[in-house]
Length: 321
Ligand code: UDP
Ligand code: MG
Image (cartoon, rainbow, N blue to C red; front, side):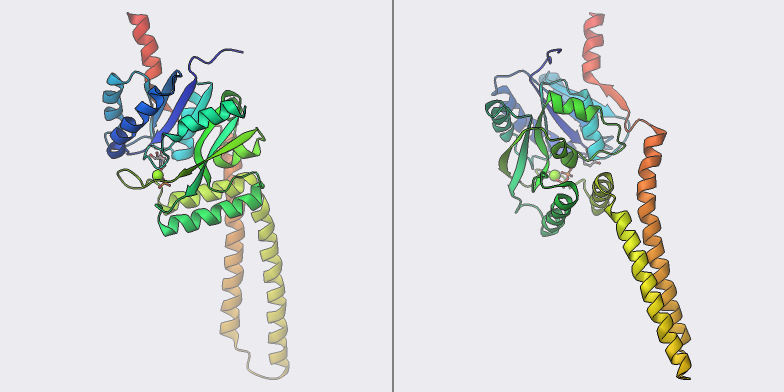
């Protein structure tokens, strides 16, 4: 086996984090310098439209371990993470958000836990997220409850994407052909030995959340459809339900007709049409989610394109000199 050139890679997806990046670097660097291990920081710029990349390039001048991987366009948090995992060279890889909601100091604990307990994965588990909005906490709570049901009990409650993984785990993840992997579900389902480190979720240091409701819904759809065909079964049950409802409506109409009462045509008609139409659309949409995934996989397009990676620049620099 090839020895990894560095012990630790810290992978951070960044999307329009110009306001947070200085704080992030100022807090991360002393932690990593204090570890006593070799390391690299892989800052993945997810097609930011602000000055994140140029600021990162400036910071890199004073911090050679800071590596910038710039993607050509915004591909979303999970895919940016994917790009970072591909690029990372470390024997251990930590993924962490750029907004200091995941405290960098915990990285030391994670590394120590991995070595002490000889495990492949160390999850950062949010013991307290009172700094998140009530809406975020509620929706996240529901998300983890549903995912534990769908994926299995090994999905740790409140374990997001702040985790440490060994090279073995990262190699497995990098070999996955899935179009849109949801790492927080895939990693626990692989069955590697693991440990947990609790941490308190801090407030975003600067800027706004880059996860609006639409992105949360997308993540949830990807999470569900990549792990379970249960929604397709729900479609069958919805279909059966509407069939029985229609039978009941028919019987009601028949009785009113036999009783010579005026059939209240319009109401029952459009209720039935709307109900059936709605259920059919839901089922079609569900099918579409799965077919869309199959389609994306069969196209085999690259999920992201790297515009540049400063590690490659370093190589050309050293070749040129
Ligand atoms: N992020 C990204 N691409 C996106 C959205 C978010 O790389 O399209 C990054 C973002 O810069 C941050 C991390 O993903 O480092 C988590 O995003 P954020 O903190 O906005 O999410 P929240 O904590 O509000 O769920
Ligand atoms: Mg955040």
